[in-house]
Image (cartoon, rainbow, N blue to C red):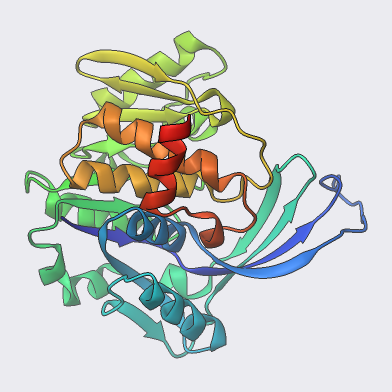
Length: 304
């Protein structure tokens, strides 16, 4: 089943340290490495490795980072025919600090990601026709996301938005979504509601449904995820593992979740499968490097 990921591609520069620095503080780190990242790219790779037929639409710079990224996508079997190259703007980069508990702090320089415009989407619109699902995030221009949501409304395609990093969105970007997947912070920003307790989470989820979103999955980190739909709500607990690096756990969850939905699985089954993939990912370093294969997810679920 064909699915499309529209989003960002970054090169991650990662420093591991005992703890995250306070504002204005310099600390000495430990290991340093460079890895492929970007929310869109992470989700595309996670989807492809878990069995999805993925087309990735993005924009990179005409530089080493951009070329390396495209080569990496091809190795994962991703269709890269619609990755645009900007000759004037560098590829996106991210600086990431990871502490000994696996928590992270990230700063992104978006570069060419923010040059992915609606006009680019129009040049490759034919690829959207017949897609089972389209997955997007917020590391590309919101106007581009709005354009896609509007054009796909009532099309039958499952349009999925992972509203990260956190940003306020107008109702035009929400109305018609099959699914939105905010974390607690993102849900609070989108709705203006307090999401510190169960009642607040449910209210925020219902507020998003009132804006035209069919399904809401609020991701809760180590506490799991909360699905809110017309049928009610259901909490899915996370799998308990020892976390090494949580950098791309949400991206892995979203990519694998989209594959399940594109393949026609129920939302509960897709959440369970995606939760297993995310659990595997936090036991590994890096962003795309942490995404598991379908074989690894199946083995994890058999042993869980």
